[in-house]
Length: 363
Image (cartoon, rainbow, N blue to C red; front, side):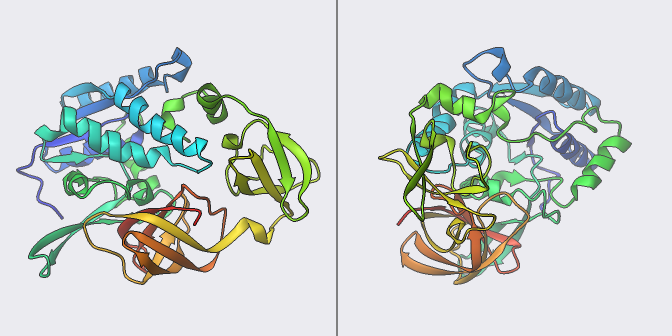
């Protein structure tokens, strides 16, 4: 464990129970952190506000409870310039992006660092993740590993697997060793105002706006065909391929289901679907990835475990190096809903240490 006693620490306080207990954990270690609330908001109406007023009330109460300074850092422009552009470019290209992954890299550990975080030795968040320091003779020094949390449901290493090595070096996760119910119990025992607050779902900045409405405002609508993959038979229409993701079952508006989205033709704006509860075409066992991003400069071995979405499930796999940064992933078992644009997150075979992640590609 890192010695934090002489460090100047900033805590990213969101108003939720996790970051609130992160502050408590540091204070219990005799540390007096400064708290920061990152404002991302939106350019649109108040309905896009993501309950910011309530977030601020909760954050203010927690900071005051422990005598910590609270400052609002406006990263609104950076978020909408960088993360929204990334999301829309990927969706427009027919890919399946993860805005929360890029928010950690570009905003929480990026834009915030440029504005205020550079003044601090460490940046603490309420993520469910852990770190380990290892002496490495080959590198003639120490390396820091991003490691999974004991709670497999809440583990968030997949959301952190694209941060830079210098960002990981400054990151600490005070609640990463807890199960979620333990964090709730601490918050209730300490009478924190956020103790019973529900966890945020989906992409937080959208607030009350549905994700499809978010896409409609930026990308509009364009009618296209829904085609059964096996028969090439047109069975319906859609409002734009960007409203649908590989592996999707609900929201297609087709009778006689279930139907699964298994392929997209972006140029022709065609969605291909397969019928049945468990169609073979909805699974992939071998797929390429590109631009592997190492968290600490260490490349993964051949035998690994992987995760392609935020679930408690890891898959055993082997990596076949095609060229620097590009691998062919051979999963031990077929995986449902593998989609280009998703991140394939790579761990050791015990799914404890995270090596980093790469983007799933079409070829």
